[in-house]
Amino acid sequence: MTATELRKLWHATPFVPFNIILAGSEKLPVPQPGFFALSPKGRIAHIWQEDDDYTVVDVMLITAVETTRNGSKAQRRRRR
Image 1 (tube, rainbow, N blue to C red):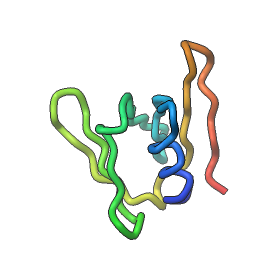
Image 2 (cartoon, rainbow, N blue to C red):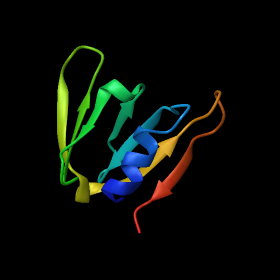
Image 3 (cartoon, helix red, strand yellow):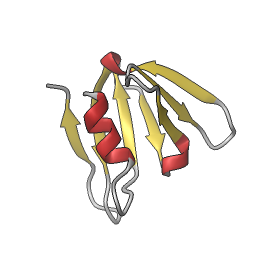
């Protein structure tokens, strides 16, 4: 996954919620654009949870991203 691909998902209009998948299959949900941020150079991602806790992730460790539309099955984008 690249910072450019993440930015496209993040700024999509309309926004589509997505899950960031890390090695080990850990999923970090991004339900709204305000729950996600990228560093200016795109190396570090911040993902907030509903309880204001957050996770800091090296973008190079993201193995895939899943998007869901209107309750349909998740579509996964793999790292290239």
